[in-house]
Amino acid sequence: MNFGQYEAFVKAVEAGTMTQAAEELGYSQSGLTRALSSLEEEWGVRLLMRGRNGVQLTPEGERLLPDIRTVLHDQRRLAEHIDEINGLRDGLIRVGTFNSVSAQWLPGIIKEFHDKHPGIRFELLHGTDAQIVSWISDGRVDVGFVAYPTKPELEADFLYRDPIVSIFAEDDPLASLPKFPIAMLPELPYIALNEGVEDEITAILNQNRIELDARFMESDDHAVIAMVEQGLGTSLMSMMMLEGFSRKIKAVPLEPPGYRDLGIACRSREVLSSAAEAFYKCACKWVAGYRNQAYNQEKNGKE
Image (cartoon, rainbow, N blue to C red; front, side):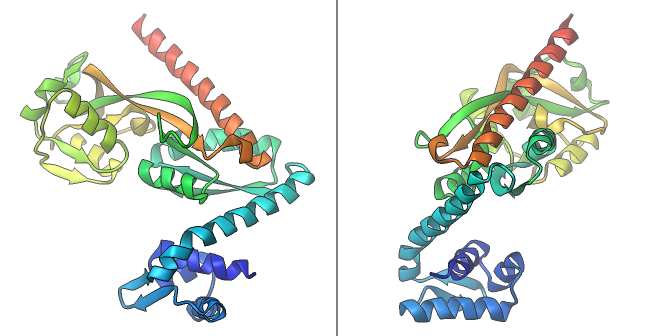
């Protein structure tokens, strides 16, 4: 059983091209091709179709992919259990996350965790909520930060309620409003953010029976903020996504209010490695402190 060949197959599928898969694995492209060809020859099964547009699963490869992922997951778990016998001195935790969590939470969480367990390594995978949920289910990551509640087959804990706000250029008259009536949104030029909070924003708009014809559509939150700063329109974003920005914009709470609820999830805490379980607990504790700090700041701001 050659786990390297199994990993090469899965990585080729995930990357979509042999070139990208070889780069991510640290292989030469010819070395990756030999590993896959050797696996196909050993099994007598064609797993991938290779072409100029990348690789595609054959029907046989599609059927075997979930089993190979399970074998790799079990192999990683075995390695982690061996590490656990020697204590939390070594090991790898794979975390699914998105940009705002990576920027605002993970540095603090990992710093607190690393102070206690300096030998533990991290692999951070960035994606959308749907991708992270899929990665948890498939065993590609141990834990992930997700929209809460998430799929019922996952084990999850609530972490934080992140307000959705409308953002304006500082010199926009609407920036001085204490709250922005969301019913006014169709009257304004709207800049749509396609990644990050699109599901939550769609839900808020549907709840308020609002249809928007976006003037601009952008997938990068930095670009959206820069466009708002230039007076090109308004956008809806979460407060967490705005933390750390020094641009000349103003965030105005919505009326009625809107939120995105965030949580942390895994397939089952009973099967987490000791390192991943310790990280899960550390994340919950750290965000509880962040939540209390945010509450106190909001309370003091109202006084």
